[in-house]
Image (spheres, helix red, strand yellow):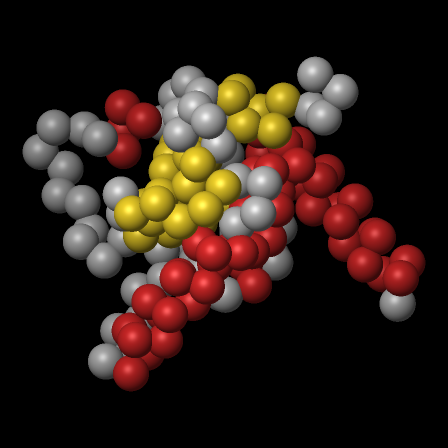
Length: 143
């Protein structure tokens, strides 16, 4: 079981690395459907945003905000995860199936932190998960 968990983490890191280096994920990892999108395309004039989409903003200091409401820090996204879980539960009661989450990083993000955030979003069955990438710098832990 321990080897399975380690292999799953290695696979996720590999897929995320490929996604960062290529144009986007295109659902290459079944358990972690992450798509990287360009900020200009996401915020294009005249584009109508989906009002049910949840936006997770990561500010320059690592603070998380869910639709502009502070919800903890990137190093420990558990508070954010609990809030999203509650939103999804309320939506389920109302027969609303929307579970899209957009991650909007403002500045540098450590690869480990982004992976942890995506894993937490996956644990509450957020899908699709999209990451805005215009100024995104994902750094390794050694940097």
